[in-house]
Length: 221
Image 1 (cartoon, helix red, strand yellow):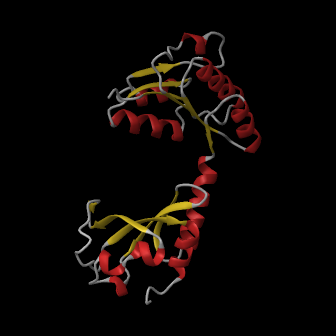
Image 2 (cartoon, rainbow, N blue to C red):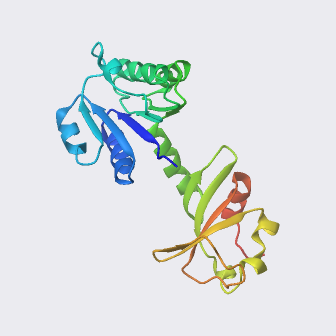
Image 3 (cartoon, rainbow, N blue to C red):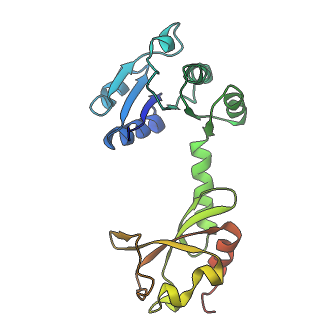
């Protein structure tokens, strides 16, 4: 299967991190920014680094988006450039365009002109930090939807020495263990008959309301 090709426009901290991570993972990345220093920094990684100001007439039209599957627009501090890049990417036939916004109005405009996904990195990070604070016994908290999340939690003392079959977490709590981490080793093909050990971390998926109750419980039942 052919790997997706990405275009990342705007190489601030957000865009650079996206471009570098994708490139290091072996994906083709077209990286565009008006700052030559940023382009020089991403050049060792990106397949097609290009120094260009997308607000200049003809610049977006000169970019070849014919083979781009996903465009990431990270220039939220310049609304005009963000809108221009989003419009062109959609008009060029890019199937999925993700755009970083700097506020609700900006995000609303981006959705109106066709952005497939609008994100607010600082806001989203703040929400995640807050949820980690209020998630009680959970080590980490990843919201997968409005109703479902994935969490990491240490194996409670009352679960140590018991297997997943004995605990029957799906039946008792309606949650699913999808991974067990011990040190640097992560196992996704668990032996349900093997007793859990102190120091292990469980990756669990479940409905938010159930996870909330689980976080507040004593695990003694």
